[in-house]
Length: 139
Image (cartoon, rainbow, N blue to C red; front, side, top):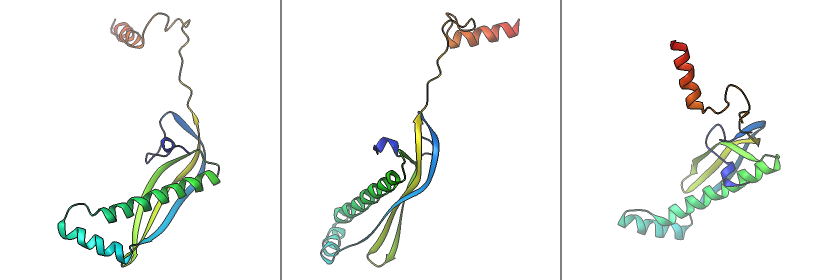
């Protein structure tokens, strides 16, 4: 599943949902090692971004995202809408990271084409058609 087919929005622009397959998720539980805590503690003394923890968080999010996409593919989805992350501390130094969303099957929407031979639009742009309608209604 392409990343462009996963969104936090309720819809996927340019596509229509043809089947809702339900909630899919990816979950992981992470803990910091003693070494990680030691170096994280050292970095916290100097302030700023504590990269050892940032990297741990990013790996956990990436892993849960991939697990969610895998779960969606197993259900036959080609897209995920309403994707979210959540994290919960289970105990000191141990965190659950959850990525979830709604697995759906989508199809590309067909663009609306006007018939160029139609009398109402023959040789007239949409803006001109609107202007003509306003002018005619004022007469």
